[in-house]
Image (cartoon, rainbow, N blue to C red):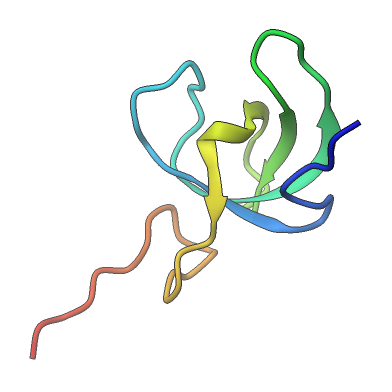
Length: 81
């Protein structure tokens, strides 16, 4: 059995991009791991805002971007000086 990339309790980021997942981009907390023969590893994730919970494939997840506020839906844009 292979290890999951993200541990239960860790914060991950879902990017808005074309994919089978309909999850909204933003920061999520991993709630559980599930095996899937058809789409690889699946994760049950909950929004850090607590407004939604869903299943997403590991391919839709990434580490939280540096400088992103995890309470926002999208990473902050840096202001130009």
